[in-house]
Picture 1 (cartoon, helix red, strand yellow):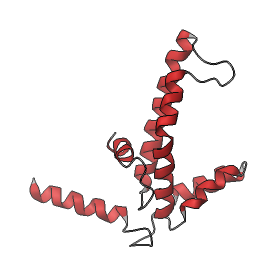
Picture 2 (cartoon, one colour):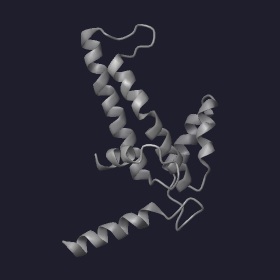
Picture 3 (spheres, helix red, strand yellow):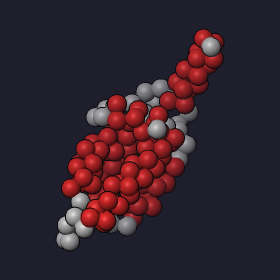
Picture 4 (cartoon, one colour):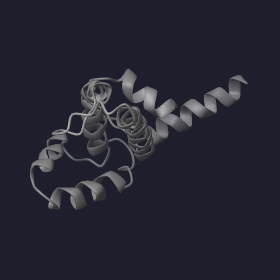
Length: 133
């Protein structure tokens, strides 16, 4: 849950980098919440027959769209790619394979034009917490 709330705290931050763990943990929890929000609508039959979405579900989707795009852009930055690569979603089918490859690629070591490597930052933070405790 830490990674999910970290992405929400950085609601519209498109600069910097996001490591794989941050992106995929946000995606996992985001997907589970979407699934959980659909279930009550199926039980109460309050789903719009054309869009197959309920009101609560749509509010959540709209509320988390910007953080989802922002963490995706930061993840692309982590692989030293421009955030404009996110627009590849406009290309049918090829986008899924290419985007999946980009999102699973390891971080570029060291600092790149988008900032320091977030893995190194986490290691420093964890080491300082161990020194304190």
